[in-house]
Length: 173
Image 1 (cartoon, one colour):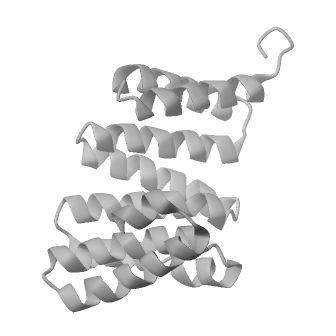
Image 2: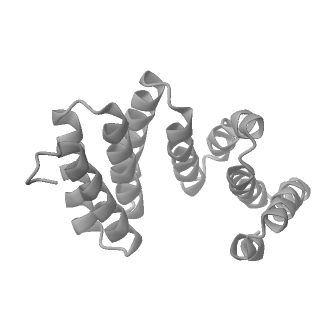
């Protein structure tokens, strides 16, 4: 991509390399790749990949336990996704904000963010994302000792995973 001057291609490659490294727990290397993707995305004024790169950096910082920087990055990504009117890209960021709120014990905030995309997901029929979101909501209810609510949403997620044939998620539901 570099040889043909395809800066967006380079940004996407750097992002993908960062995502893979992140998945394998190589945070320092993942961070370097994500920062490179962010820098190039900003150079070429590509808001979508800027937002995606910020979100990836947020995931990396969250994995390192640096929730303050992760939240800053997620909020920046969310602002960009709002600016470019891309709610599909915003959903993972919204869930990540909910996950940090859950990890830090702010269950009210976690439920707010987990519930935020549900109407859109239901409207678009994205059943996999609905079930994933319900899993997150159920987790918060469980931590709040609201077992009846946790079981209710967990059952709904489980039924959806079964319907979709997603056995690995079904086992976790």
